Image (cartoon, rainbow, N blue to C red; front, side):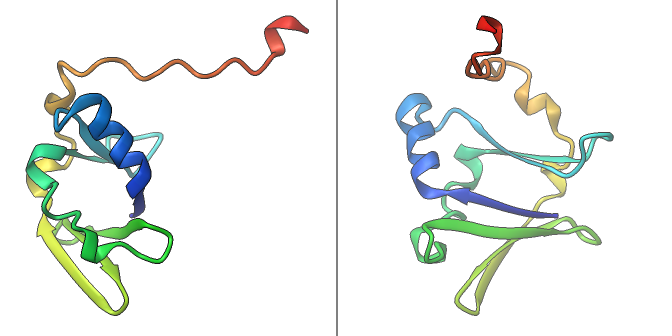
Length: 108
């Protein structure tokens, strides 16, 4: 399971919500297979020294032990993700997703 988080987008979320939001790594659109990461708990993991040249954190989930791994420039770091796998309870009080921007089709 591969993922990336852009630093600029993360800054927007921090501006809007402080540390009170979750990063979600969704592994399937058909089955429950997601990692729900409360930003408060993982913010030190996503450190500036692990940003790639595009100002993003790039990583993967090692499924046999559910380790969340980010890497750049031949370096990597990881943390155990088993407490966050399908932890939808962490989203219980979260606001709904933002509505999609209109595509103009309603005016056709």
